[in-house]
Amino acid sequence: MIEFAVKLAEQRKSPEEREAVLAEPGFGQVFTEHMITIEWDTERGWHDAQLRPYGPLSLDPATKVFHYAQELFEGMKAYRQPDGSIVSFRPEANAARFNVSCRRMAMPELPEETFLEALRLLVDADRDWVPTREGHSLYLRPFIIATETGMGVNYPSQKYLFCVIASPSGAYFSGAIKPVSVWLSTEYTRAAPGGTGFAKCGGNYAAAFVAQQEAVAQGCDQVVWLDAAEHRWVEEMGGMNLFFVYGSGADARIITPPATGTILPGITRDSILRLAPDLGIKVSEEPISVEQWRDDVASGALTEVFACGTAAVITPVGQVKGADGQFTISEEGGQTTLRLREELVGIQYGNRPDPYQWITTLA
Ligand SMILES: *Cc1c(COP(=O)(O)O)cnc(C)c1O
Image 1 (cartoon, protein in one colour):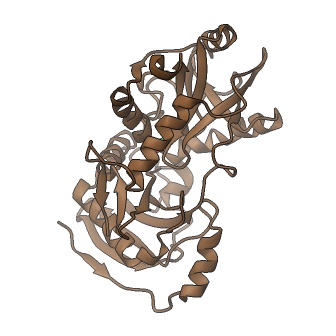
Image 2 (cartoon, helix red, strand yellow; image 1 turned 30 degrees about the vertical axis):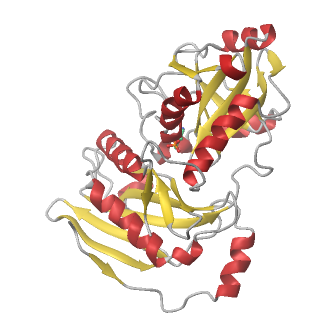
């Protein structure tokens, strides 16, 4: 495996300064004192791996990423355990998905063990930045950019930079488990068959901001994406996958749209699909239309809706608004939503058994 050169920051924050930041970190606002960088080019492959002080990158204005957006990223968290150790949740799945995204974006794959070693080194160097407060964590953001200089569009970049940065984070949506309201976007499309919907590339987000702005202008918190052809089939919410709960208590079952290329296959989504049956909740992956959503809420068959992803874990959806009107699912998170959330968070923070071996120690 590639060897990392280690250059530690000369100036470190004092424990008091660090505590002041960790008291109210927000989300993705502040960063730790180190970062990982690894270079790639066609001759040498992956080389020059470093753990080094966090700081700006210097890039030529003609660098390819600025012009053609050859970029993609991952997102995961490091969680403080009751015994003080630091773990992550299924980081191997992030490493694998990173490479799926790389293939789609014509970028070089990074060996999974190098991806994991990068996380371990960074978290170990900045271990004091992993929050101890309940619900807080250290958000890890690996990403890769095309660094070749030149604007030729006939071939992908011949040089890349892989980087990992880390950001102490509080709860993603302020107010934690208050339900969000969503806007059904019929004007805009996130992904089409053959496109990049399944890849975690920045370009998907660049094209999504305008729809998120529209959602906010409509008085909603988040945009819900529908399929490209009919604007009828539900895909996902902003940067999170969606689940629909039918029935309640021992009769609860959950469905989520199948991840067939236009949806980002969330690791949280996959974990819920595996964990729910062991809690007695039936699961299925099936398409759901906007009409079915509305009608089944009206009939009472559909009892809860929630979104899931690493950043906000599980968030209930309360209100739905679209061009044809609006309806309310519930004013507070439902029983099944909260149960799944508790189970998942319990595993991540080491307060519950981990029967699936989802926890990997980083430091
Ligand atoms: C990252 C992401 C998700 C959630 O994936 P997790 O692995 O659960 O964090 C869902 N949708 C989009 C568009 C995403 O980028």
